[in-house]
Amino acid sequence: MARSYWLMKSEPGTWSWDDQVAKGDEGEGWDGVRNYQASNNMKAMKVGDRAFFYHSVNEKRVVGIVEVIEEYHPDPTDASGRFGMVTVKAVEAVPDPVTLADIKAEPDLADLPLIRQSRLSVMPIPEPAWKKICKMGGL
Image (cartoon, rainbow, N blue to C red; front, side, top):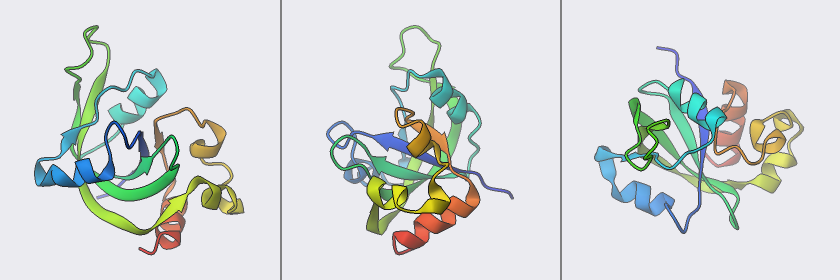
């Protein structure tokens, strides 16, 4: 089965890696996304896909890996009914969190949406970049 890779940003004060881990195998819906491009990225996600869990705002670093356990479905926090969400569960922490500065310092990663579209909250990560970031993080 071909797996796709992603990066999902969360403000640690709103939803942190520790919050995600605490949900266990039940996982948690990735709600609150109100950007069409990010929403379309979630629509493309399949069960078994993996995503970096990225603490945004002050931390700006990859701290863990989550797995999609439920594909795109309605987001109960969206009264308009236009946006949905996927459900993800924590897979493992990144032993050495990879900062945005670390990623920017790596020429092979210069084309990532994380750098080129810094406001995007859910984005695809090409497999070679996924492997490189995993290695940078001690996985």
